[in-house]
Length: 338
Image (cartoon, rainbow, N blue to C red; front, top):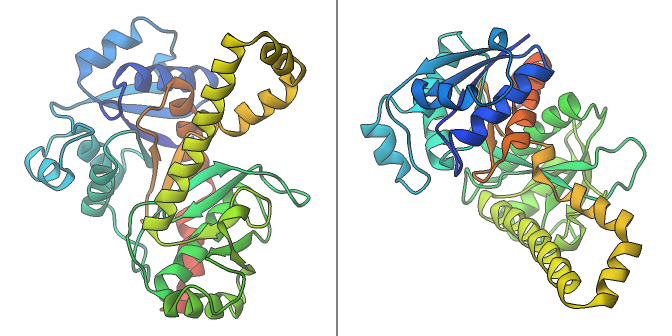
């Protein structure tokens, strides 16, 4: 089984929820986990929860990078920070992948400092999994969108590489033989969106390795039209936050209505099954976190607010990505672009 290094000090609720999630994974799976962080704090949590000591070890380090810290300054001054130590464990061969719910910028910089970028890849990408409707047989109820924050603006070559990376991840993790690839744009026509997106559309349309289904508009992001949606990091981050925000507004609105009106409570009871399905679709804890693609090693970046269930699932996804050798699939896909 793969060995996964987990940044125990990264996240809004670290180390409590991080350690609890890893403890759950240690009981449910054979995955070997290395908790990276303050040993006394980690051990304190482990003493209060069930866990399998044969599947958990601790790599002690003194420092941690806070969620609000400047990533570059923190990486420069805190060389013994848990995210940096975790990344070094991977490069030294003591772990096969890294999981963190910590500062996103620090995670990307730590990996850039320790991991090698796959030969031919121009930019790495944060690829977020998100819930959507299923529109075709065999589709995964979770789609992939990239980039969602590692970049701001991109050139056509970089967007095409994002498509190849997303295609490789979906093939390995979602087990889709030919993932449907879409380009996020302001219209269906191939000439929409300016020179970069028009050129990207042309190149994706002519790419023999990809099942390109054309431009995807914002109102179809949550449908089954595409399994992988490609976009610049600025746009992808906004879309992701919008999806999360709409889910929170819906949950809050139904909860408040149920408290204040009897007829709403009755209606919600009648719609119980449908509402449970919506909650399940918008529950990010089910998929754990977002892979940062383009490095020779895997890192799963979890939501800062991740609970124990999310961390447990992130550990499982990281192990699966290692077993299925996602980086090698990406490397083979970009060979023709060098």
